[in-house]
Each structure stands twice: as C-alpha cells, then as structure tokens.
Image 1 (cartoon, rainbow, N blue to C red):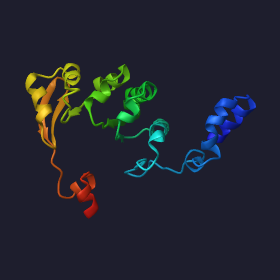
Image 2 (tube, rainbow, N blue to C red):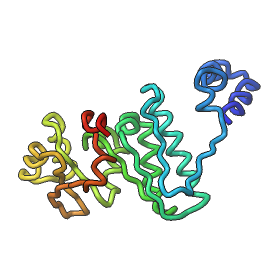
Image 3 (tube, rainbow, N blue to C red):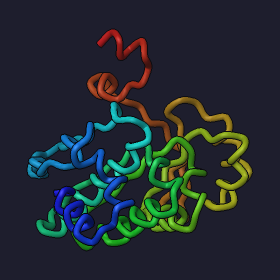
Image 4 (cartoon, one colour):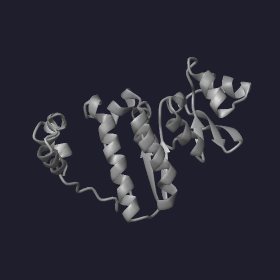
Length: 208
C-alpha cells in the first residue's frame, strides 16, 4: 500500500514528501490510492474508467494503471491488448512518455499488444519517447489533422503531397493506414451493433 511508503518516509524524516502524500493516504483520495487492488485481468474485457477523476490526477492514474498492467502481464504472460485512450495525457510529459515508451518496447516479450489513441498525431512528436513509440508501432492510423501540425506529421511519417491534402480534408471515419512503407487510405465503418458502443455524439449518447 502507499501508506507503507509513507511510513518509511516518515522514519527517514522526509517531511516534504510526506506532506505531498498526505491526501493520498488519509485524505479524500485515500479510497483510490491507498487500498489493495481487487482487479483481475482474467476477464476478457477489463475497463479502467478515469473520466470522472479530476484532470490533475488523470495522468497519475493512467501511469498507475499502465504499471499495474505491466506487472500483471510479466507474472502471467498471455495474449492481451492494452488500449490507452487520450494518450496525449501521457505523451505531453517526458517522464510519463518515457515510461510508456519502455512499456511498448517490452510488451512483445509478454504477448502484450499496445494501442495508443490520441487526438492528433503530433502528440507523439513532442519528445523522443513519443517518436520512439510511433516508430516502433507495426500499424499507424492517421485521421484528419490540423493545419497547424500537419507539417510535422508529413515530415515524421514521410507523407506525399496527396497524403498531406487527404489528411487535411478527410471526412469522419476516413484515415491513412501506415504499415511499414505501405500507405493505404481506408474508411472505418462501424456496424449497427458497434455504433452505439463507440459513438461520441452527445445527442446519440443521450438517446441510448
């Protein structure tokens, strides 16, 4: 438990660190950060939902979850897929980007696939660790890009002028699939059963 670390730091008279950990040990966040985990990865689908957490804590929680998954797959290697949504939260800070880069690099040893989803491809290009993640990925899917970042994306992924224009004007569901040196334009179409599960349209969500 986090409290164990807290007690050790108290004994070492690390007052400043203890003060910063206080709210995670006895404060309002103790139920989240200072309890043993009962999560099992034996289920076919496990979802860690952190959307209702304060934004200031989401990055921390994403790191904790990623570290938990990494430790679990090390002790029990089998085919799994880790999907990280809102990846920019981890990519925008060098330390968290370094951790995720290491996780991606080691994942294959433990039969773990890693898929990282972010709003803009440029989120992966803010530091060397993000670039390493992009370069190590077997498949990269680029959807519509912003005019302010397209130049970096074109340079990093070695895109043609046609692909540049495609990413600036593509419609919903259209994307550029990159597998090694092969670039293919695709359109992602959800089935009738899949659509309610993945829609982000507020009106459709309200009607569900």
